[in-house]
Image (cartoon, rainbow, N blue to C red; front, side, top):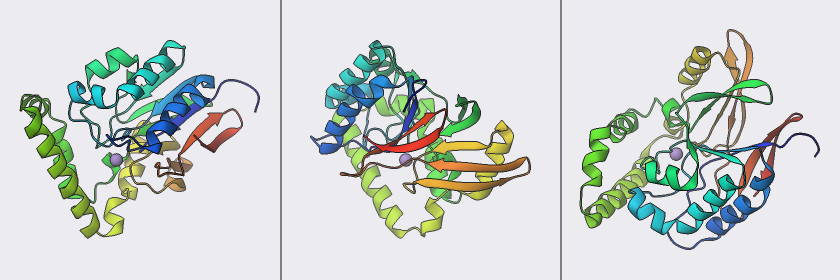
Length: 243
Ligand code: MN
C-alpha cells in the first residue's frame, strides 16, 4: 500500500488483568503497525477491567508504557471509554499522551465525516443497561466509588462483571444489538453517512437507511485469540487487518 499514513481503528480487545496472548499481540501492534499510522483510534473496552487509574496503571503497566512510547514517536492516539473501562482517567491520559475522545464524536476519515462511538449508547432496547450506564457515568458515583477501599472496589467490580455475564446469557440476542432507530437518529443529528463503533462483537458493514441517502455502519471486530484484527483507513478505503 502506498500513499499517506493510514488511520487505524480498534476496540473490544478486552485485555485481561493476567498475562495473556491478547496483551502480547496488542503490545506488538503498538510497536509495529501502529508506528506507521498517522492516528490510532481505540474505541473502548481496551481493558476488561479498570477499577481506577491507581490499580489499572499497575496491572497494565506494560501497555501503558507501550502507548506512551507510541505517542512519543509522533502518532496521535485517541481513546473513547467503553463499558468495561469507563474509569480510565486523567492519570492514564497524562502519562500516555493519549487523547480522550467524547462519545460520540465526528472525525474526518479519508475525506468523509464519520461518527465514532463505543456503541453501547445505541443499544437502547436494553433498558436496565442504559440505566446502569447513566448511573455509572455520574461524576459523584465515580467519586464515591474511588473513595472505597481497594478490596471493596475489586469485589463490586467482580460482582458487576458476573452479573452482566448472567444478564447477557438471559437476554434475547436482538436486545444486545444496536437499535436501528437510535443509529439513524444519531447519524442524522450529526449529519454523517458513516458510523464506526464496537461493543456488539458483530463485526461487519451494515447498511443504514437515511433520508439524505445511502449510509452505513461499520462494526469493529472484537479480539479473541487467535483473531485480533483492526481496521485501517486510507485513501483507497477501509480494510481489515490482523494485528
Ligand atoms: Mn462494550
